[in-house]
Length: 66
Image (tube, rainbow, N blue to C red; front, side):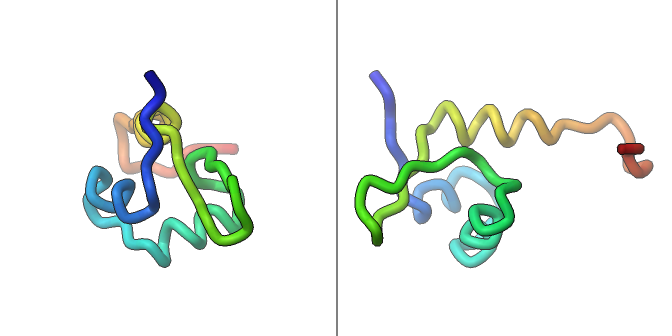
């Protein structure tokens, strides 16, 4: 069964992220996929949040070439 998370719940599972930071990621399109069932409601699928987080895995602090 799909688990849906509010922005507050996403902030609880990702250390260091804030609601404002998550909103900025939505604005720039660089955060996890999200759903807008109503104009004022934002939800995230737990699996999408975990996938996005794990896609940021790095093995070096060197800049990644584009």
